[in-house]
Each structure stands twice: as C-alpha cells, then as structure tokens.
Amino acid sequence: MIILLSLTLCTITLCMLVLKIEQLIYQTTYDKLSAIDVPTHLLTSVASVDAASDGINRFYSDIVQCLWDSSLLVVPRKKRNSYKFWWDEELNLIKKNQAIHSFNIWKNVGKPQIDLMLCALINIRL
Picture 1 (tube, rainbow, N blue to C red):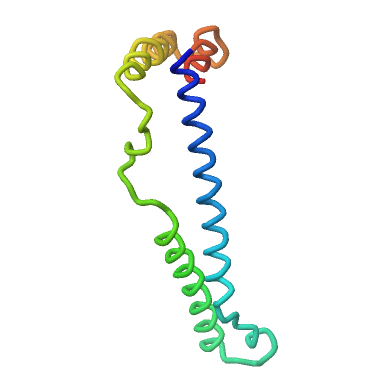
Picture 2 (picture 1 turned 45 degrees about the vertical axis):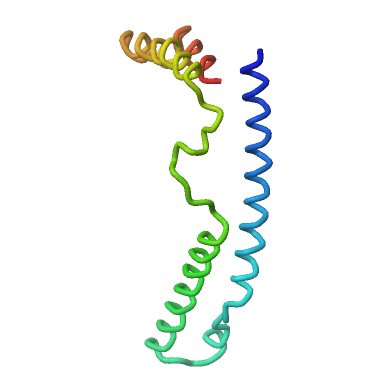
C-alpha cells in the first residue's frame, strides 16, 4: 500500500513537472518562431527558381534552428535512468519475479494474442 501511494505521488509530481515543461516549451518555441521572417514575398513576386528555393530553404533552416534552440533552453538533459528516482531494489525484485516470469511463460507458449497469461502480463505492468 505504501509503495502504491508513493508511486502515485511520484506519478502526480512527474505529471505536473511535464505540464510545466510543456508550457515552457510552447511559450519559448512560440516566441522564437514569431521572430522568424516569413518569406511572404515569394507568394506575390515573380522570382527566379533559385531565389525562391533559397528563400524556402532559409525559412526551413530558421524553423529547424528555432526548434533546436528552444529544446536546448527547455528540455532537461540528464541520464536516461536519473528520472526514476523512486525506483528501488524492491521494485527490481517485483519486476524480476513477476513481470519477467510472466513474460517468459507467455513467450514459451508461443505469444498468443489473447490469453490469460497475456492478461496477467498486462496487469502486472499496470
């Protein structure tokens, strides 16, 4: 019960963090994209193919650079497993003893699409 409550609180905290990061990503990206010069002159003027191609490529590059810059400002850069601060040895044992065992049984019986073992495997993962 304590583990379930702890996991629930961690999940809620993580969801709140993700929402804040998403809002920051949207705002940062919006601000940066708003500063890009849109080559609307290509829609109304007769330009050479090379000039039009250069304008479109420059516009594309500006968008890609904007997205990259926004990600560097907002998306945290950490090791993959550093986000599982709540993962401990007890959860490792549960995973090994239940999830992996159920998966191996399901695999050994030919990986049926609908089966009680598959349902058990899915329930363990939830």
